[in-house]
Image (tube, rainbow, N blue to C red):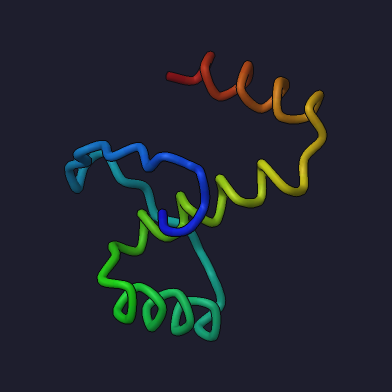
Length: 74
């Protein structure tokens, strides 16, 4: 993560740990291009997008619910 005050959470993930998601070819092309420009892995970029979305588009209540649900899934 770059100019934000968000500290990156660097987790070492194996290929087995990562999961596939389906996106349109246009979205995939944009993600791939941005990742190439920024020297990032696709999953790192998607993590950054998620963090930004959560911080800027979810209410505090929604953020707490998300945190509770995802912490139970670990």
